[in-house]
Structures are given as C-alpha cells and as structure tokens.
Length: 165
Image (cartoon, rainbow, N blue to C red; front, side):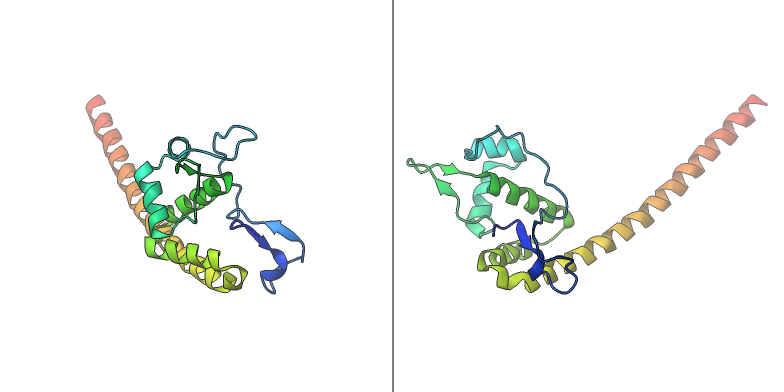
C-alpha cells in the first residue's frame, strides 16, 4: 500500500467494511496542474506546482520528511505524482502547526509500514486536538473583532445622525 492509502480492515473496530479504500487525508487532494500521463517532474516543476522553494524540497529530503526521491541518469531529482501528493499532505500538516519533528516522525512511521497505524493515528489525533483548540481561540478572537467592528459601525452611524440634525 502507498503512503496515502489505508485498508478499512486495519482501521480497527470503527471500520464499516473490510474493503480496501483510499484515504487521501479525508478529502481529495487539491489537483496540481499536472500534465495528463506524466509522472516524473523536475525540481523546478515541483516548485511551480507546490509553491515551495527548491531549498525547502531539498531540506525536506535531507531531514527525512520526503522518502527517497528518484534521480535521473544525470543525478537530477525526479519527483512522482505520489511525491506531490505527499507534499500536499505535508503542507496540510504544516498548516496545523505540527512541529517539523513530529512531521518527520510521522514520515518515519509511514516508511515503517502498516504496523505503525496506531502510532500514526495517535500523532494525528493529538494534532487534531491542537487544531480544535486553535480554532476555538480564533473563534473567540473573531467574536471580539466582530464586537469592535459593530461598536465602531454604531458609533459612526450615531455621529452621522447627530451631524444631520
């Protein structure tokens, strides 16, 4: 199985069927503007697709966040669609605020195979809890901003009404 696939039967007692299913981070990945039928990309093409820098892509590989990247006969990196899907997932993890060390740990667990599903789930559940906490904090902050905006809108209308009297 690939990094982005799971088997429902291995998900535990909450799984609804034993059929194999694709788990692309619970939502279909954003489609990269990839040419049909192409599965090998240069680092500059990946930079254009992802918005990441070449330095960041090399760093991801160096720290173990990216698995082995194929090379051409001249030594140039050749990324696959699977690599692009992984980079999309890593981007989602970055948006959660997950520390890089945890992302690298997750990548290591993926490379170790299906036996690490419980550890991966635990790591993702902890990240989910952190995201929910941040969402709640942001909702509170948004409510404060809305009250301030409303206050200034009301104050502006009151001043305008006083001028028109």
